[in-house]
Image (cartoon, rainbow, N blue to C red; front, side, top):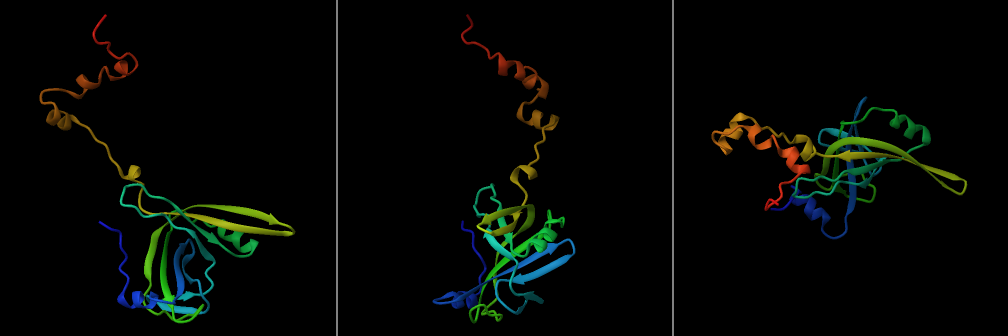
Amino acid sequence: MALTRAASAALIAALAGHFYPVVLTRAEWPDGTEFRHSGFGDISWDGQTWSGLDPLSIGTLGREELGGDTEPGQLRVAGTLDEVMALRAKAIRNHAVEVFFGAVTEPAGATLAADPVSLFLGYFDSRSITFTRTGDETLHDLVLGVGFGPSPRAGAVVTHGPEDQQAAYPGDTAGRHVIHALKRAFNPPIWPEP
């Protein structure tokens, strides 16, 4: 079994040889959904207008695996200190974010060569701000943690009742097997007895 993307034949053809990549980001903020892309100008796609110069630049996206464990990712926000601090003040936890990858017809263009493919669909999970000083210049980043899907442990439910016990051990009760479990954990039986 493999994890695949449903890229259209037109997108695959556009990616053959030399191509101009574009990243589109749909982010739900408390005050509305923003549609941004990594180029210049506006792109019309999926019934929306995606504005250029995306302030969300991809840091890392969570790695996909077939197992139950998920790995979080990060998106970095670029902007002036005032813009970054204003975004930091917004309550974004659990708001949706989706990242698409596609190709445009020219460098930093605004015309898609084909429909983009979804790279990541998840939610904003955390945020932090970092300051780095280089000489006289201070750089700042707002790092938004992103996750996808519920944690396997968050979705797990463990139940045990009389029906389960009767199915596994007919005629027995749950207490008979577990009543001395704690005692046995600290004072295991010695075999053979002295």
